[in-house]
Structure formats: structure tokens, C-alpha cells
Image (tube, rainbow, N blue to C red):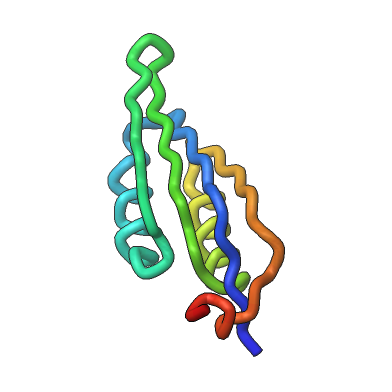
Length: 90
């Protein structure tokens, strides 16, 4: 049985030239992104994004794995324990 997790993904874009690639990946995984907030931190020359995500372990691993392979990007994730899909409908 597939299980879903709710979580937060923090992304620091250290190389702003990587932003279009990050946005493309987020677009591909839009189905698991519940919400997104992005803040440009001009004083440090970076952008910080936070995502609220809800998806299977495989989906979330694919998302964070893709993001983590982009040069100039740092990614950290905090997820809930696994919850069966049927619990979502309750």
C-alpha cells in the first residue's frame, strides 16, 4: 500500500542562475506541492524557498533528489511519519 507523508522542504538557492531549473522541477512536481513561499534575501545574494508537500515517499524522494542534484542549491526536508492513503479521506 502506498503511504503519503506531509512535510516541509527548505531550499536555498545560492546560485541565482539555477532558479529557472529549480522552478522547472517544482512545476514537474506540482501535484505534491501544497504551498510554496519564496523570499529573495538580497543582502546575502540568495533566495530561500519553503514548500509544504504531501506525497508518497517515492514522489518526495524524487523531488528532493532532483533538486539536490542542481548545482548551487541546498535542500533539507522534514517529513511526518507514513500515513496510509485511506486515512487522508477520513
